[in-house]
Length: 270
Image (cartoon, rainbow, N blue to C red; front, side, top):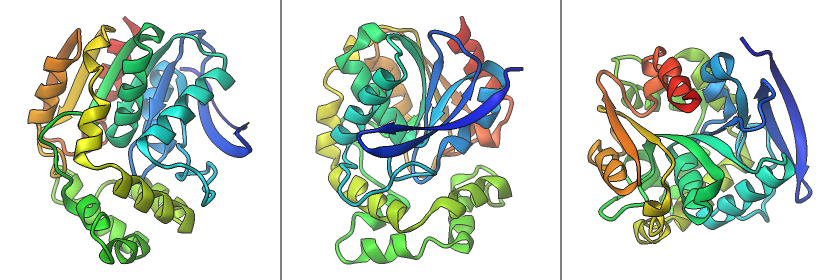
């Protein structure tokens, strides 16, 4: 089992927090969704090593007000991160918004992707509409109030719907979100969601077919935010993809079903 370490690097005058395990030259790079952090990936990191990053605005990375939290801004950040880490080729494991970032980047530079896993990914596909809390945040006037109300108690309550079970997500998971959900994260979330119209997302997916790396599309069937049909859409659009719909799992299927961490690492290690 690779030892886990933590470090902070500087990219464009802002701190970027990383969790790292192992020292492979083509590591797994983990990209989380919103509003979480690299904490999401502790289990697969422990099994297969790699690098998990806190995206700008989240976790322990920089949250300045002048950063670009749009999809294009995050894609540029990922490119800068890989340059900073001197990574020419990578294996990608991505969830939610992190998957939108990683797939948009991979569409532009498919030759740099060795293998990938996309989990309940924000769709870069036609027909998507924001649902639930994300739709609320995008609503004029109401959005700032919604993100400002994201206390630990509220986050725990909201997580009940994201989980396939009757209860909230595990307490360490909820605590990891709440502990880092400050004004900077609220501001980043507001800008990110308001900049990501369904039309813009679909445009960003124009080059998905150029991604020919073997892809595993994992989808929790009971995701209340992104229907499973978008998993099928990704599997049909990517050049070499396998879809696995996970029963009894919601938006974070590998948290609902911990054994999926091994499945993720297995695919990325072939």
